[in-house]
Image 1: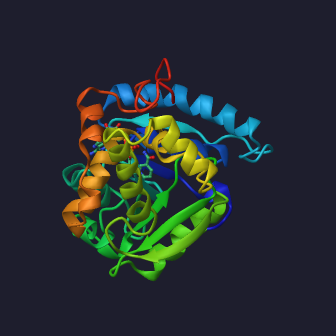
Image 2: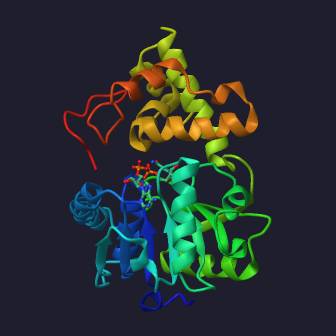
Length: 288
Ligand SMILES: NC(=O)c1ccc[n+]([C@@H]2O[C@H](COP(=O)([O-])OP(=O)(O)OC[C@H]3O[C@@H](n4cnc5c(N)ncnc54)[C@H](O)[C@@H]3O)[C@@H](O)[C@H]2O)c1
């Protein structure tokens, strides 16, 4: 793989919050993308979302202005990922969804193609058992939204090979991202720190200590958090946050990672954050 964008053909598995936004990042850098999802409606929504995100990114000068956008192909079949030069898996944070997506992808892609997971916290070595060639699997934990946040947490599993690490580094360079490589562990660095903090913020609101707005205001004004933990939770998606906390709780036993009742109640009510129009805050309508 080279830093020349025309050398890359990216397949992205999962057309949800992150898969869509990773596709925007690549397309905006001139890299063609095959976006695969088992849900046709998610693929239809993704097309409109990507068009809107490309406009937003141009306004923010977050993407190169002089580059023809990469082609977007949407597909319901992972077989359309067969000739990709790299695959980024961004499906639901449930082991059964990840196992299916990674097994199917590794069966169709060419040996030597890096298989990259955007998991928030499932250890890479656990997922390596689901891939045909464990040496080709690594993690890139993009932050949301990937087309605006340049830094990416890269996770090297104990079985990840040098070739896969080098190929992923070349891809990230072509996408103008800055990588920080860490070792494998549940939640790595960022989710291990951020997700229990958000869970505690929701717990504090549930206990009546402060309002949603006051918690976010204090974390912004006193501790320099850019948006506040509960606005961040709405951006992430509260369903994904609960899944990620369950991943952490199951693997670490840390009680601060057990999803708290106020968070679970919002998910039960379908108030999932910006993607449904309401979470801790009310957005009036679903926000891409
Ligand atoms: N939301 C965030 O802010 C954020 C940030 C960093 C990492 N992540 C991680 O990124 C991944 C995706 O998260 P998300 O928020 O985009 O989730 P999401 O719920 O918005 O989207 C997940 C998509 O995956 C699809 N899917 C499920 N199984 C599939 C399969 N076998 N093949 C193809 N598609 C499949 C679903 O239909 C859905 O459209 C998760 O691992 C999550 O933990 C999320």
